[in-house]
Amino acid sequence: MTHWFHRNPLKATAPVSFNLYGVASSPAANKICNDLRTARARLLDMFTDATCTPEIMKKSSDEYFSLIQGFILPLDGTTQENKLRFIQNFKWTDTLQGNITSAQQDAVFELVSMAFNVAIWYSKFASRLAGKENITEDEAKDVHKSLKIAAGIFKTLKETHIPRLITPAEKGRDLEPRVIDTYIVQSQAEAQEVTIARAIELKHNASLIAALSFETANFYQKADHTLNTLDPECSSKWKKYLQLKQHFYMAYAHCYHGQTLLAGDKCGEAIRSLQEAEKFYSRAEALCKEYRQMKGPGSTAKPSEQLFFKKLGTFIKNTLEKCQRENSFITAFIQKKKKKF
Image (cartoon, rainbow, N blue to C red):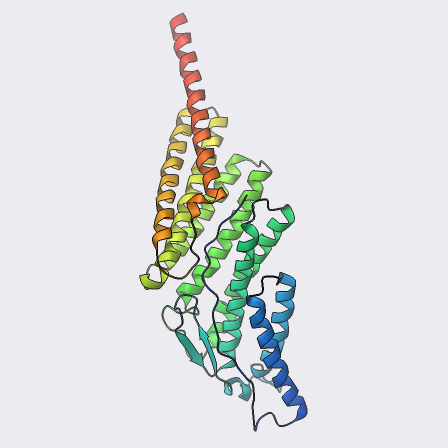
């Protein structure tokens, strides 16, 4: 199945020279600063390099993070703060705030901001790969793995690194709980979309697919509600995406639940479930149009024209017609039997 995912833009950053005159006084210290500057520039290039793979990204990010840790971790093995941590200023934009920058003279801020971008890159890589029309099994596994990596990075930042910042994250910025929580849940939901597509492809039990779809819809609803108190100017388009995906997977859940009911000869209940699926699908269709008209961060796309969306509409229609035919046969058979007696 071809997938479509909304993506917010990458964070931008100002160049950092790491010219620590008067501090880096030995050739070895100067080499570390030069290596830091080079590794940072290389990693930033990887974010926009279309040929970059997860393996290259991991190598580049590991190299930079291992060097920047020298500005953060205690040098003598004690719990005393590393004096190098606050020696260099770093500037970063946010994924929702356009060109507005945040600056902190703190290496932890740099670590968190760069790692945030690495997570965004993994989610963008997954989105590019998932958008292919004939995605292979191995590619689907790569999509799932990349989304799980993104969720893991966001979660680690939230739990381990962001609490260490001296200056708390401002409201509406990437590092504040509402925003990073939404990124975590969205990544989890999208990874589960891949699981659902695989379950459909392998013709797994309809009740399993219905349960997974319902859980995925709840993920998207949770992410949407997390953004409720955020400024609509920067979050409204993102929220529309989360809402349309919630309704889309509720339509999936009702459709496959209808199939389960039909298999149990409960045609009347199956029809009602499919009618609910139609309602959720129609609402998702309306949200797709609203999404296209929304201004704000994120790609411009026509989700209702995507293959994944059209396929579901056809599937609901065909399944409902099948239920109605089965119900007509049963009704006719019962009436015929009554006439006999």
